[in-house]
Amino acid sequence: MHNILLGEEFWHLFPDDHKYLTFLKKVFRHEFRKNWFRRISTAMKYNKVLRENSELGIMKAYIDNNVVEEIQPVYFYYMSRFFPAGSEEIRIWAEILWENDPILDAILIYITYWVLIKVWLWEEFSIRINSSGVEKERWKYREELFNFYSDKKHLLTQESLELLDANPMQILSSEDEDEQILSKNAPNMTKFLKKDSKAHYAKFKEYLDLLEVPYTEDNTLIASNEYATHSIWEFRHSESNELISSGFRYNTLWTQLWSPKEVPAVWFHTKVEYVISLLREKDIKIKNKDSIDLFFVQLWDDAKKVVLPISLKARESGINTVVSLWTPSMKEQILKANRSWAKYIVIVWFMEAKNWIFQVRNVEAGTQEEIKKEELIDYIIDKIGKDSLDFYCPARDLLTE
Image (tube, rainbow, N blue to C red; front, side, top):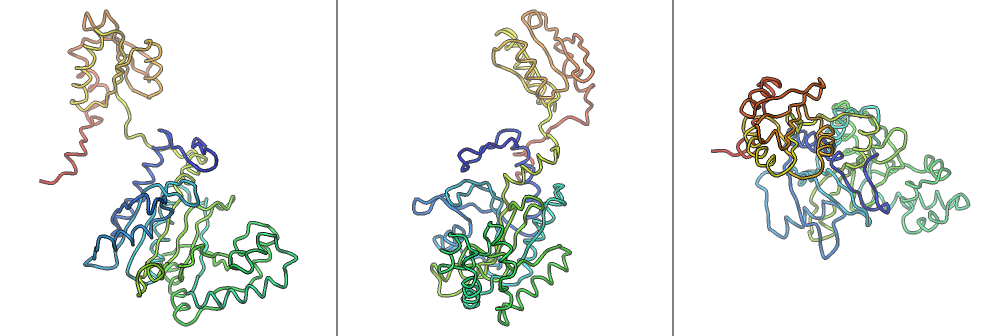
């Protein structure tokens, strides 16, 4: 894995990693746009605290700016850095606000499911689901769990013994092998669901079946947030059990913060760095859209003065062109050109600059020939073909009249 994690807290993505990051962003963004999501960004800090998630930021942004959407529900997505529990992660995050319909929960799972399939990770994950119910139902469930674990204190770790009084639901997510076995026999949250919560969970599963999304019900799956309600899910790696993506509904967050009335909402996030590592492990190759047709290397000032104008003209002619304007040895420049996978390398020394005759190397064929300066651009276009010329300009393509 080429990503570097320092002190188990902060990631660094290097240039080759960004090919994968850009790729994932584009695939997710395409799915989001097809499903009516719009991109949003909020403050990195609140009260001098780095953001850990997006749901609080979105709600606070709406309240602080008195924004009211004309059409509800509203669909948002994030692509940014977050700082959960003092660490740092790049996350792709989506939320839907102002609607309680469980079909929206299923749609968020569907989006993640199909993105992972489209990026060739279809054998790498499994989906687990459960219901968190509502607060009153969870209190009843906690009582039942407390009674269940109280009879088995001798089997619990010290950490779980401390959780028993605070929140026995947290014991269900223990990583201790013996406690995991014990938790499989623990009471199931779904048995404590009342009419509305039962209906929500049943419809949630019905829509997943309709969308042909495979899943497993897991009674040990719980939300870490007190404001979680109803649906909860996780995508985990099939072998390592590492978390890939997760989400849940959170209808009560606003009532705990500002509002006397619930605002239905549901979200999911995907851990981008981990997905990148999976793509690398599977040796998934990402197409390089910045492939280089022509690479100029030069030595000394006279060569620079010749190379720079013609390299700019080559770009204007649609040839993907790179020019080295630094002054290391010619050997180092050619090594850089070879590592860029350029198709053609133009070598300009003092004599080439003086005589306006360039050494042009066909990298794939391993051949080299002399080409006059005024013939170079036509020569390269003839070699790579007019269909390979690139006149893409994002400013021109995106602007409307």
